[in-house]
Image (cartoon, rainbow, N blue to C red; front, side):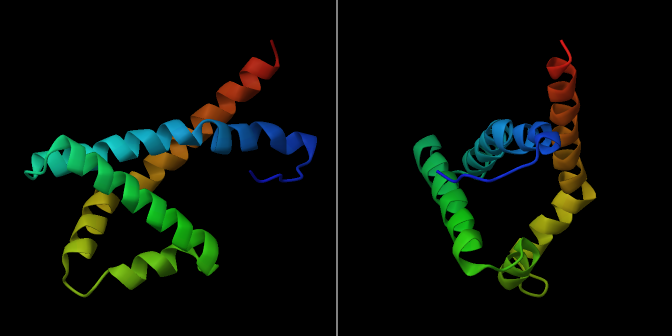
Length: 115
């Protein structure tokens, strides 16, 4: 694992991101797999492809040192399938929804710390 030194005032934010984040990733993984099934792939293949996609993307992000936006741009060809999917996510407030989920977890973590 990774040890990150934080100030005490940052602990609730770290908990919201890294402690709650896996559940958000699992929801995304499940949605990717469901989309594969919807498109005609078997459940097993869809789930394995979703797992490998997340593993590969996370590893590349970790080792490349590139900003995620740069990595995204590298796989979005003009008028291609990937940018069409990205546009759909943006139209449906994907990033804002993820940010709101982390903020809700952060607020709840703060509330629980006061009890």
